[in-house]
Length: 243
Image (tube, rainbow, N blue to C red; front, top):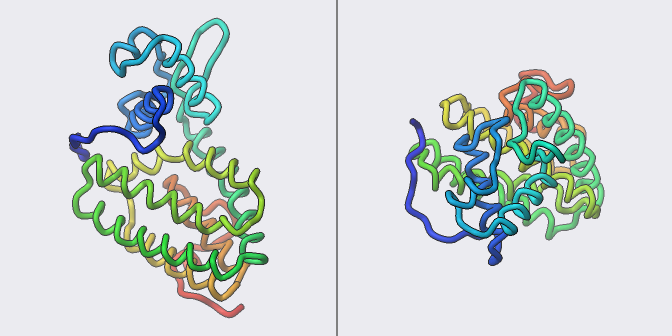
C-alpha cells in the first residue's frame, strides 16, 4: 500500500461535530477506505467515526449535496459510484466551469488576484515535490489541499460566487480520482510542473486562450484522461506562446 496512516488529531474543516464527521468521511471516500457504491449504514458509521445518529445523518446529507454520497428514500445512503462514465462526466463539468471562470478572471482580475495565483503556484510546487518523495496520507492530503488552493486562486478573480461554489463541488468530486492516481504511482510530476509553469505565465501575460488550453489539459490529467477539449499533447507542456 502506497500510503501510510499518519497520526493526526482534529480537523481543519470546522468545529462542529457534523463538520468533523463529514471531513472524516470525505477523507476516507477520497482515499478509497469507503468504496464506490458501498452502503453507508448509520449505526455502523457511528460506531466507526463517533457522533450521534442525527449528526451522522446530517454529515451524510452534507456529503450528498457535494456529490460524494447518494441518498435514496428506500435504500438509505451509499458512496457515489466511480465508473469510467462518472469520471468523464465529472471531468467534463469541472472543466467547463473552471474554463469559464478562468476566462472571466483573466479579463477582470487585478494585481491582488495575480499575487494569489503566484503564491498558490509556489506552495503547490513545494507540496508536489514533497508528495513525490514521501507519499504518506498526511503528505498526500497536504498536496491535495495545495492543488485545491491553486485551482481556487486561478479563478478567484472571476467575480462569480456561484461559479466558485460549483468549482468547489466538482473539485471535491475529483479528489478520489486524483488521489488514486497518486496512490498507484501514475502521476507525471514533471509534466504537471511544466503545465502549471506555462499556465502561470499565460495568466500573468493575460493570454486567455493559451491559459484555458493549459487548464483544460491539467484538469484532464487530474483524472488520468486525455485533454477535455482540443489541446494537443504538445500544448500541454510547452512554454508560453504568443498572445
